[in-house]
Image: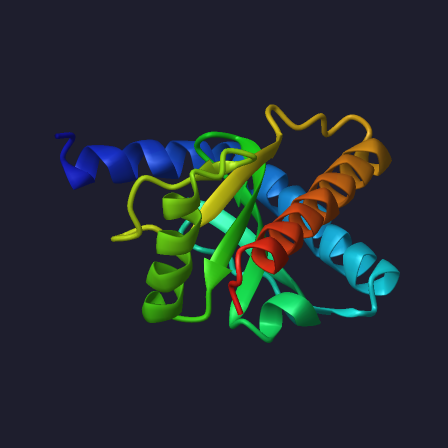
Length: 167
C-alpha cells in the first residue's frame, strides 16, 4: 500500500496542474444540468434537490415516480468516477426495504437487468449501465441517452412490481 505522504504529494502535483479541478467542476455542472432537465421534463417524479457528491467514488441524484415512492423505493442516476460510466440503480429507502425487495427480484429469476449478488454493503437492488463510456463531446445526446435509459428502466421495474405482487 502506498504511504499517505506519497499519495498526498501526487495529489498536490495533480491539483497544481489545475486539470482535475476544471474537469470536476465541469462534471458537476453537467450532472446538475441533467438533474434539472429531468426534473423539468418529468414533473410527476420526485427528483432530489441536489447531487450526492460522494468522495469522488460516485455522484448521483434520485428520480422517484409515485409508484416507487409508495413502495419506499427510489431510482438513482449514478456517475461512477473510477469506472467512468453512468448507471441507473433501484434502491430502497432503508436497508430493510432494500433487503425485502432484493429477495423478491432474486427469487423471481428476473434477468432484464442485473440484480446485485448481495445487498450487504451495496446501495442498489438492481442496476443497469446507461453509458459506458459517456460521450461528453455531445452533452445533448448524452442527456437524451441517460434520460431515455432511466425511464425505460423505471417502466420495466414498475412492470415487474405490478406482475409480482410487490406492493
